[in-house]
Image (cartoon, rainbow, N blue to C red; front, side, top):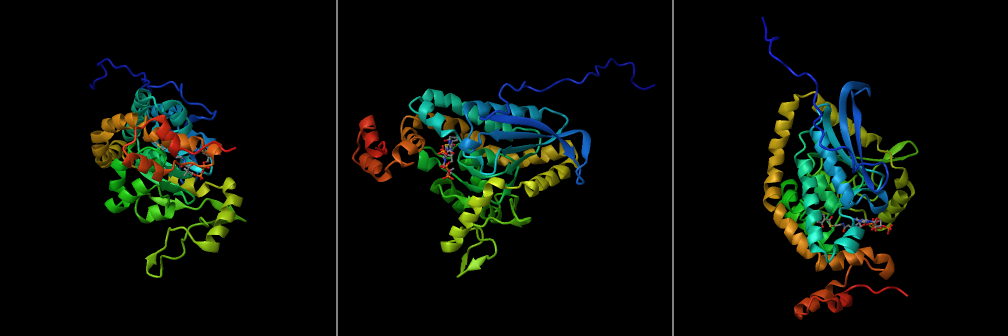
Length: 378
Ligand SMILES: CC(C)(COP(=O)(O)OP(=O)(O)OC[C@H]1O[C@@H](n2cnc3c(N)ncnc32)[C@H](O)[C@@H]1OP(=O)(O)O)[C@@H](O)C(=O)NCCC(=O)NCCSC(=O)C1=CCCCC1=O
């Protein structure tokens, strides 16, 4: 006799935390989808899914608004708790950007000079990073375009990145009034050498996908331009040569006429980018994961993730407080300058004048701020 006599409740419970209030197909928003798992021949596997969490704000380069942050949290928390989900894919709409971070319009027009409001926002932002790092499914960043600022931070929180070769990677904070304290300063030194992490974090220079692949920050780069039926690698980036005149040129921007030609070709074709190869690579990884023991897989992933979490968990509350305070000073100026670039014709402040004012121990009042901001054009 077995144990049939023991009372059992066999009705499957619903563990999903969220009922999609922050998901929508309307931009700006976050799209949450459960796509069927497919085998290498493209055949659907019954009852198993991949959760796709898609940032949908292409007009503003998929920057996340406050409500979108909530949508991302809901997406990862539901994916984590869904027993039919194999992996989560984090991506965005369109051929230009995965994400360029916080929405600078919201930052400038609402959060600047409201430090407590921004502190509350940062709690949501930190929760978004925690939801990615805490998702009990493998998380793949499908980098459909540039991954900049907070976009780089939420991308680095993912377990693996597969990238379009048109993507660029970097930070924008020190140029536009913030610091890469949404994860990059904690994660990047794990991905790159300390020297590279330092420079990429602070310089606001954008590095190509090929360069980042070479440096080990992402898993795979694929072309997305298909011209006359042929895949064409990013025409602005050197990929055919490794060394020129004793310098590593692979992954660097071309120069002179070659760069101008590349730019023109990109301008002509980027809008019609084809993500077939990108999706194939994502599917390949998901299929590999689907054919591993789920518990052993996620335990292994979370053991590696823990190293990223170590510094993030140590620093995240401090980041929240500093970023809140900063919203009344440099962030007011930096995001204000970027947000008013169409009014003034310049997207940054006059940094040297600002430093001169600081050197003269000037009060940080609106008079001093006005001296360094652009002026409305006639
Ligand atoms: C370098 C850029 C990312 C790309 O430059 P470029 O290719 O020249 O494109 P643009 O013409 O600048 O941008 C195209 C349109 O998109 C709008 N846009 C771009 N990014 C944002 C954004 N983040 N929010 C809102 N709108 C955005 C841009 O205004 C253009 O619109 P238009 O109407 O003119 O067509 C460059 O775009 C850039 O530097 N963007 C700003 C990046 C930025 O500062 N992000 C916020 C950084 S701070 C952050 O993310 C943080 C995260 C958590 C921790 C704290 C924190 O600060």
